Length: 207
Image 1: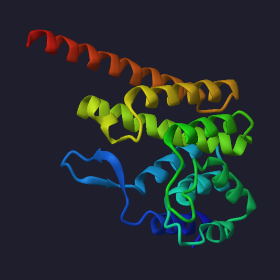
Image 2 (image 1 turned 180 degrees about the vertical axis):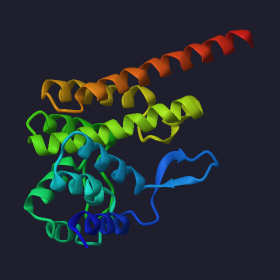
Image 3 (image 1 turned 90 degrees about the horizontal axis):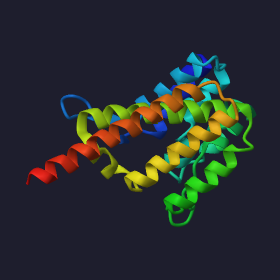
Image 4 (image 1 turned 180 degrees about the horizontal axis):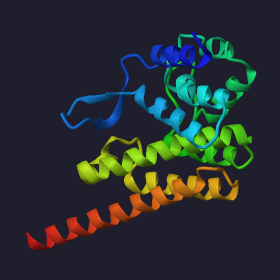
């Protein structure tokens, strides 16, 4: 079995039973989480990433969301130090080893944004592809489900939009390959939110 397939097996193990919050298919069936790191890895390849970067994209949420009782660092290390460093660089706050809880949402996001300003090109590419995939999903969910998509986030709509706006700015400043696509997707999300808010105001005025 090649390295990518081994990494996919590890990612499936780490995310077993997890679903993507707030996202379901046309039949209303929750989408298994594993499809999202796979999509991020596909974007890495599209933007000329190499095998290590694609593997890191598959594993980028393992340290965050995998069972904290498992030594994921050792399991990821099998793929080499470079992959491990990228995964660690893309990790948005590990759970506390005692409580199993993460830091507050805003605290984690501000730390991550500061980290990206000096992150390596390897980390930037994988992170940008992950965030582009997230924005694409948010956009689709907005089209299909409206503003209720934000009900599934730990933060409110304005906080989520602030975060992706700052991400877009940093990726442009760092000249990351997917930066333009990410900026356009963020603009599409902002525009859709604006349309939906105006529709809500119009509907309220008719009541």
